[in-house]
Length: 349
Image 1: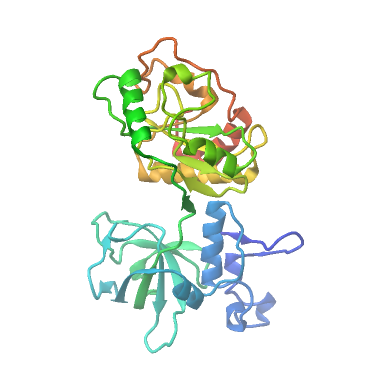
Image 2: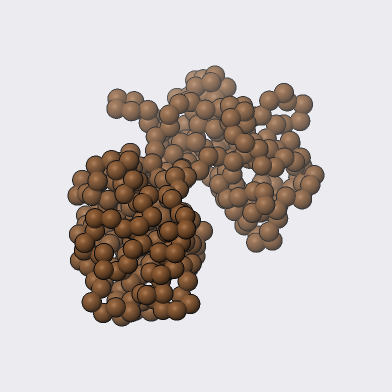
């Protein structure tokens, strides 16, 4: 895997494999020896940025990452032997960075990113793999391959998801319970088992306007759906014009955002209307991928305008035959772009 790191228009950029190779015809030593090109930290952060759909904002080095990011674990590693037991999920997670300080060194010299519990034993082990770059392009290699022998710290990169909870007091709890019982039946509850991701647009110009609309606990100014109950509309996520992702409520809590599917659907609202941005496309794709990883039960990805195609399937529940709406959002163009970025997940449209 190679990652092209570009600083902007007019900057030629370089592939990760260029930073640690001899100059043209061997005329100079390794570029990294002369502090030229990118190093392992630059390459790793750039790769993460590419995954998130965002450009690198500055140069990075291992020491800076160790200083800036919170530590979640620390141990010594030698030949695949760990000085202490470290479990997956508590405290380490896929995507955490691992930085190593070699024996006798005063600072940390190398960094990679954990890919997951490769051998499935629940414990961080030498067979578990990392993405790292050294005198090679960015590649997946096991921890016991050698480059991480030394004193290791596990670092937690910040999540791209920002918490921005809407009001969820007694009025919304009661309205949620009443809505569920009325539309889904006694005992249906308000807990979501995620099986469908539904993309929307807010039809507002700003994040503030959208948030203020969702923050109200009871429905106002929506005669098209007012007959369906007092519960206000909302969603689980709200994506701003620049691609910033805000979580409004837990994914397993029911939101009123899509008739017939609220007990199985995670809703993603996008600020705007038929003018959604490329940043939002990338953010939605990243979030869909993140949700699928955390909730393997998810099988479908649809736009709000496509929701009625699921009527008659086991995913659909709605007791009131006349309670239906026709929606335009977010449109086939937006869905085509997002689906193109997550095609490998095999989600049903």
